[in-house]
Image (tube, rainbow, N blue to C red; front, side, top):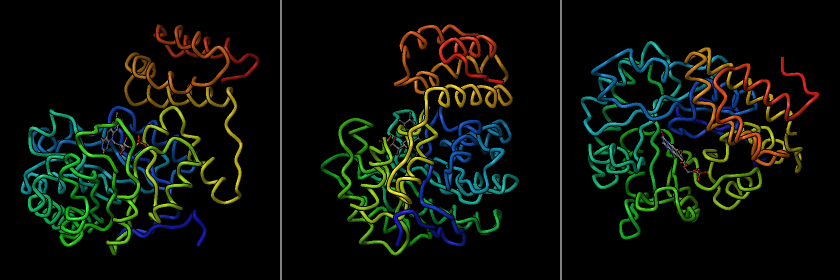
Length: 333
Ligand SMILES: Cc1cc2nc3c(=O)[nH]c(=O)nc-3n(C[C@H](O)[C@H](O)[C@H](O)COP(=O)(O)O)c2cc1C
C-alpha cells in the first residue's frame, strides 16, 4: 500500500492520511482553510469546553463552525462529566461535524484540575464512560458522527497506560485513537516515543493516528513507515507552514518535493491575516497574526528584521507594506 492512503473512521472515509492536529490558539477557521487548500485531508477544531458550551451555548460558535473549504472536520470537546459531555455533543448538531473528538491529552493545569484532558488517563473507567456518553449522544443527535479520542502515552513515565485507555475507549465505541506519544509530565518537551505508537497499532482493530515531533515531510514519512500508523497529525510543524501538507503528500507519492519560496510564505501569511480579519475583525486579527507571522517568516532572508517590524503592525495595510518591502517585486493583491 502507498504510504499516502485513505483512512476509514467508522462510517467516514477520509481520502488521505495527512491530518491537522488540534492546536489551541492556532487551528482556527482561517488557518484550517489554508491547510485544507494545501492538501490537509482531515482537520480538527481546538479543544472546546463542554461545560462552557452547555452553559453559554452559541458563544463558542466562531471556534466550532466549519471553515470555508473544510469538507471533513472534527470538533474536539473536553470535559470530565459524562452527562455534560452528552449534552455538549447534542449541541453540536447544527454544525454537522463529521467526527466528534474527545480530548484526553491536554496537560494544562486549568483543564487537568477539572479532571479533564490528560487527567482522564488517570481514571480510565471514567474515560470509558465519557466515550460511551458521547457515542450515545452522537447517535441520538448528531447523525451518528463517529467519535474519536486523542490520548497521551500516560500521565508520567511511571504510569504509561495508553494501551489500557485506548482499549477502553474502543470498547466504548471510539472509531479512531490519536496518540501523542509523550506523557503529561513531559508537556511538549523531550522526544515523543514512537514505539508507543507502533505498539498501539499492533493492539487495536481501529486506526491509530500518530502525533509527536512531526516537523517535516521526512518526519511524517518516517512515522508512517516506522510505526504503521494509519495517519499522521501535524501540530507545531504546521504552524506558519500549511505547506507541510502538500510537500508531505508529494514526498509520499513521488519521493521528492519543492519547499515553498519566501514569496509564497509571505503571500500565504497575508491571506491568513485576511481570512482571520473576516472572522475576528482587523484589529484583533493583526494582533493575533503576530505569532503566526513569526512562523511564516522563519528561514526567509532578513526574516529577523522583518519580524521585529511586523510585531508592531496594527493594520492589514501595514502588514502588506512590510511584506512587499521584504519580497519586492511580489504582488500581494
Ligand atoms: C500550543 C499548543 C496547543 C495545543 N492544543 C491542543 C488541543 O487543543 N487539543 C489537543 O488534542 N492537542 C493540542 N495540542 C497537542 C498537539 O495536537 C500535538 O499532539 C502535540 O503538539 C504533539 O505534536 P508535535 O510534537 O508535532 O507538535 C496542542 C499543542 C500545542 C503546542
